[in-house]
Image (tube, rainbow, N blue to C red):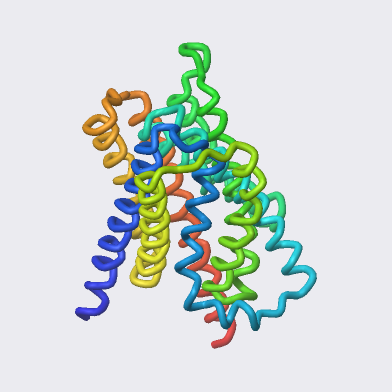
Length: 299
């Protein structure tokens, strides 16, 4: 009984830690203030993050991938590379809250792509949730009512490119260990970012290198905490907690970067997050129904 009660609490707690880590990562990138070009910042973040792969190096060397797994890993690395470039560029152009709110579109894109490429069914209610999420994005962007920055378009690209990366991860995670999936991605993105970084290279100061190492640390910690959250509680419990990231982004932007609180961004973020929570809940309900039918068929 105590285990059943405590697991959701642990899941929520770990997801709160995840949100703090990811918002801290965003704030640290913002703190660089464009002193290091976006492509170079992204490259150094992943290069320094390779330190955390040292314990898995032996297993990585022994890994043998099939040609199909190689193609998927390379494709995922390319999509993640472009997505990361867009994200780092957006961070230098638009407020923290807008970056965080628009990033919520990624699960929506994943749902759409899963229908197109994996043949998953899309019920009317999930279609309405997707429409609502896209409407939330329009509330944030408000095209025609203000001048859109290139950073806004970069974030739209980021969400789409990362959704492709996550969809491929969903496929390969059934075939490879999670640690190997993360390791292959980290190496591929580091290699992919190298030529972009070389083209705009500016020798960073020790202080900026320290900030980028901090980005690598909190990013790794965020992914680890998210894994613990998913292990402790269902996604339907932990997903709504991610909305706190928007709250923290608004607070950090106002307190440390003098970014005014934009009610349109908060409203749009709430709409998108609500749609994502509904999609997550519906997927969980459908999975339970399938499992129940499978169980009944064996009785």
